[in-house]
Length: 524
Image (cartoon, rainbow, N blue to C red; front, side):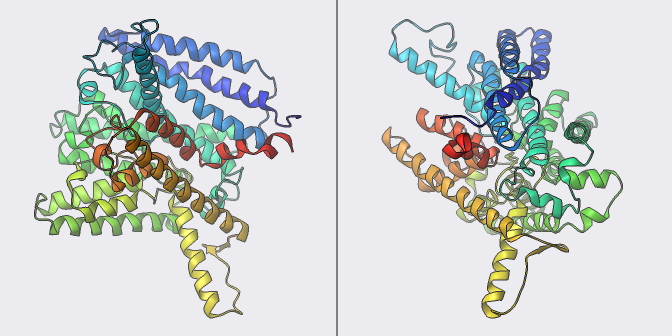
């Protein structure tokens, strides 16, 4: 079979990304040196990513990225960065039992000991799980309470930083590549932002990337300054500089990792209020934010998706707040009720995955509303995950159009966003994408239940539904054993391994991975 995809070009460009991953790895390395902690995890990662990146980069001198090569490059880049990002977690024994004789998996493997080999496999999967969850801004974790209390600040900041990099990466991919590749209706960003070509706000993709980078960094600085100011004012004693920077990284990236085992619930209510707007902004279309920064208020004001996105948050918040107010076992008071309702709705709609309290203890009605929030997502062209508001808006408009036409068969009623007509092919793409996502979600749910039963782990149907949605839609916390104050370490090793793959597929919009499985992609 003759391969008609220039795979060498895709590998070469992926190598360039991996090579430059050494730069952000210097941040935790320097912190480890300052704190007198082990530098081996980061030195090893830097050596591997530089050598691997250089080796891959030499595969081709071709730098032009065509459509097929872009699919392959996107899939390889997310996978490659996650593998390299897992190296520090592996050496640090993240998620491992510190009391076991196998805490450091790379140094203590007895030859021929099958139990030790199994522990190595578990350590590898756990490290890759944490890294993939970080890079895909999922926010699910296998870290235990011991990890939060005893892991070095260098490991914890790398955990935050890889999420920040993932948020920036998906912005560039979504605006610079996926809209060009017509993935799941991402091309609608042009219509919704009233911009003829959002892939080129500037003449070249490199300039567009720099523009997005500047806006993203500026938002991160604003978040860090806001959080740290609360500490300096004495309003948030434990929001020190390390915590301020850490939470700035993951709030703007709508990612959800926190150095605190209790997430944002470890801080004062004023911190929780301060985090909410940054989660909302991080899940807002960055093209609209760019125009807003330029002083153009017309485009954001005319954005139907923005109104839909904010409206969904308002409706779900009101619903959860009412349910909490009616629950006799929940803390009473207007402010806590509104705060916890708003915070956790925003966290799950934007797919951030923070928690202000253990909503796993809430009544079934409130938890089911939060479950629905997982499927919404923020705006297209943002750091958010899940289905995304723009697709739901088009689906609802399409359903309304179909109902109208069923009553008036002779009517011609196109689906519009603003004044622009959405092409029928695009509408069909969106319906197909959402159906595919739901099918994969249900298949993952079945696998979680069956695999847990295989090893004797008790997982309820609702726990499985929540975990599957959280992993595949890149949300973070779920319910039961995967609740916001718990972790995913209780799931079987095989389940965690499959979850790693599903986070990868869900983050890059399904199509760039699945298309690689088609023989026609390679040979036609």
